[in-house]
Image (cartoon, rainbow, N blue to C red):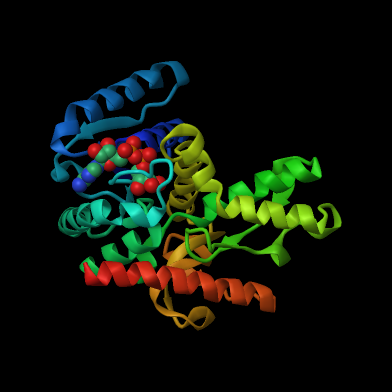
Length: 310
Ligand code: APR
């Protein structure tokens, strides 16, 4: 029986549970939150189970604030923490989210030591780093979700500009999950056709800029951060792991020399299968992209330093 524990039953947690149930990706989904939110989590779980009668799925959904209920999970997806508010940078929520990720990491180690861990909480690169540092989780079994989401934003903007279906756009965003992220122009195609043939340079540059600020754009509009696409991005990663799909997805992975960086997490192309992060691919980047990645690494290291000092 496949079991997925969702740590945080808020906006993303709820969307995750709904998407997993619909796909019957797991027989059992646990929606975990703090004791003050236990009844909320139970209510969401019940609503989703009732939805199964309409949509036709049998997934069991449990709402809880007891870590024991998460025991034996195959996948753990962490959204615990506060989201950004308008005007805030991802860095601004580190003080609140750092003690939360520490609490989650300690309990995960105790109750779900064999899980494949996907961290979504922000600031992403710092949260996933702290989780691993605290638990010594095997590097292939822990990733941060950012690249799939940032790539989806990049793909949508390119599709709209080129007036083609988003289904045909392939694009990848690497680096940290901040405004220095690296949309890889050289890896961008529309069903194999280089995007540069269909999107003019100035438009392309504007899209790169909008992608980098894509999270903030939604926070500005909604007053809280995005949840539909973030949830589905993590579901794609969980599915790749559970079904051994060997998908090439951009993930925040722990670097040990890849691209010349070591000792922290950053978005890189990974192969995700039943072994977790089975491979980190070192793709050819242009000099300009290498420089962007270096700048992004500096920004990631800055927040990792804050975590290490805190
Ligand atoms: N353990 C479990 N859950 C917790 C804990 C904890 N220690 N602390 C807080 N939470 C819960 C909150 O009670 C809340 O229900 O995490 C949930 C977060 O839900 P939302 O506030 O709706 O936030 P959401 O939009 O889901 O985003 C969560 O993901 O993308 C990031 O920036 C985003 O950091 C934010 C996180």
